[in-house]
Image 1 (cartoon, rainbow, N blue to C red):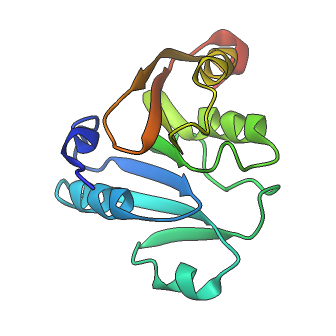
Image 2: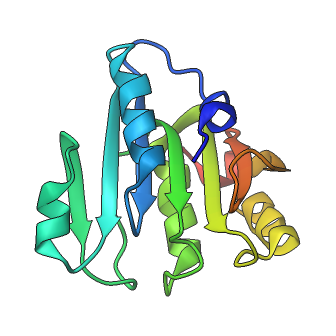
Image 3: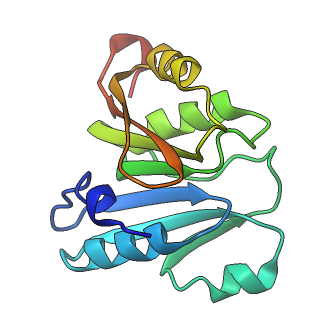
Length: 162
């Protein structure tokens, strides 16, 4: 998997904190972790799995295990500079709840990235959903083979508070 173009989407600054919410950590997880460590930042992972062994084997400093697709992940308000949903939004029973949490945990002008295997995500519908939850400048980007990827920006709006 060539991650060069994927990693070019991210320009972490010292101290930045990214959160990847996923069903399966992979090469993107490792690459983001290395990229953030190089600037003294941190990658956190919310891992949807029931497999304790695979969770414990995940070599990430800050991680949380969520055991089913109806539960939300936990994150503090304005605590993350980028949030990446990888193969989770389509599987979760409450995707709108995940977007609300994403909006709350992202700092102002931070980015949300939604990645799903090719053909799983309805791109126009996802773009509309992001707009509904006050994420702006959403674009579908072809940077990772086998994945559809949408990136948008959190813009502070009066209606959503944070």
